[in-house]
Length: 328
Figure 1 (cartoon, rainbow, N blue to C red):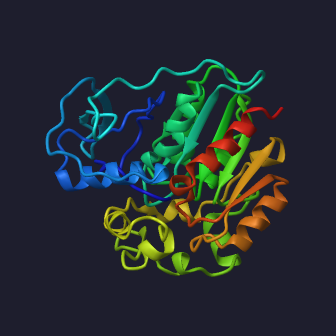
Figure 2 (figure 1 turned 90 degrees about the horizontal axis):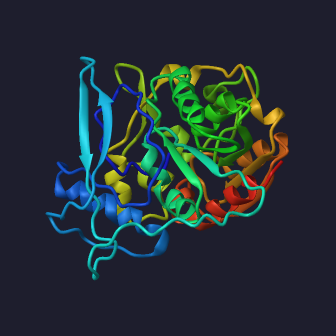
């Protein structure tokens, strides 16, 4: 959970985006307003903000496929904006092949509830430019099983040792999916880390109440979202207010069945683990994060950020993932 940067035609799944390439993606047929939101937040980690022109030249195209409710394939073309707001457009920088000796080359990033996979974009850009093979998993958020399946599909495409990373709800997903033999380490970023038999609902009920968890409500179909009035302060307090408000009104709901489903595998029992604690988090209390980190015996790093730390503190999060890539 952190930031939905691209609108989705969803309540489906199952296309996994990968491997990731470091370009600033924008839907070619999206309204200009959402395009600006996406670009502004993608620059948050570097402190740069800008307003996009209404039309951008097409230099290369990314295609992401989805299936709609009628099981018809919908294709969305993406075009990147210029790499600099003041300079001519250029291709993405070449990737470095000089990874540390013995490092796992593959990184699979799993997003949380209420957002999509592009919440990982700032971290993915950093890692990709250093030569890692980064894959972003698109969770359907319809059930735990569906999200785990999407992650397992991404893992099946990896060649060799892989670091599996989850943010928020994504921690539940990697706990279940992380028993894959390719997974060399697990990284939890402001994330839930359940044990066998525990559900997200049980963890939320048993832990300290927070501004964010108290604002989660179901609609008439049982799909959960955070009250849009509470979302900016609870989830993204260190993002620009206009961006946080836009994200609050563009949430992807988590189905209640996912919220209530217990895990039947806890991969952290058998894998090296790392945990990034967000000390200003108002969704998962820092005390709860410290409890998770302690019981999974994780190597722990603290960042002074909100639940959106994967955007605002992308460099610190990426550094932890790089450290996990060296774990054996």
